[in-house]
Length: 272
View 1 (cartoon, rainbow, N blue to C red):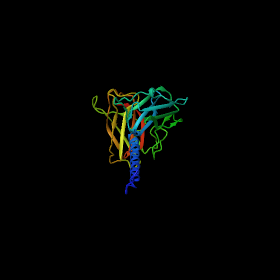
View 2 (cartoon, rainbow, N blue to C red):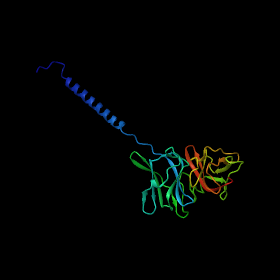
View 3 (spheres, helix red, strand yellow):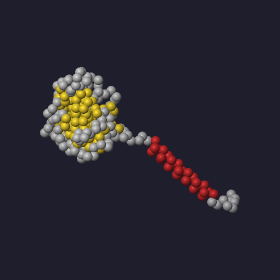
View 4 (cartoon, one colour):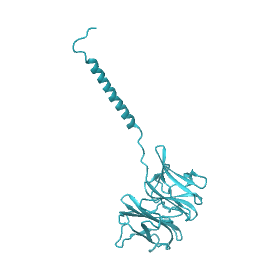
């Protein structure tokens, strides 16, 4: 075969171009493989507090953060035989929106105080622990999940929390005052020991069951008055609430989007 002058480098150039093309194609295929894969789901951040109802049932309250979709969380309970999935032993949230949202309480259908409770989130085919409320055996109650800078006390909400409910007092009832049925209101107040509080929320709910209208009482962004107290003075008596019933009151303090303190108390209703 006759070789023409000037063709000595053609084969080398073609080979180099083919190699470059194959390399680029390989990079593109690898990129497509990674980018087309399922992206990791965002793990919710929720503060869950455990307590005891007057009937001796374990209760779990969503204190704030992301709402949890029904079916995308599990509740493991250790009643002496190790942790077991007992999600079905808890009632579903009262609201019909399909989420366990802030202020809603789940009640364990069994009596007694378990040794341990763990709440997990289901995402991406796996589970991530969201909360494990610390059990304080001496008090027979659970305390909130520890938050940075917050040291919970022996009672629900923590006596050492930087926010404390001041009205009603520790031994006082939640009194509804006013004229006529449906026009009575109660007052709740709290005080903080921190200067970096940017927001305070209040929640009041029936301890042993939902209100007849299926709602809970909540006040967001309660304003501080000139005396340094956060006051909610128009708590309505929602349908089904009667004298002598127990209600749970919760005060939550935030610095921006970070919850820096919470305090809870159970009291009796009067004046209706």
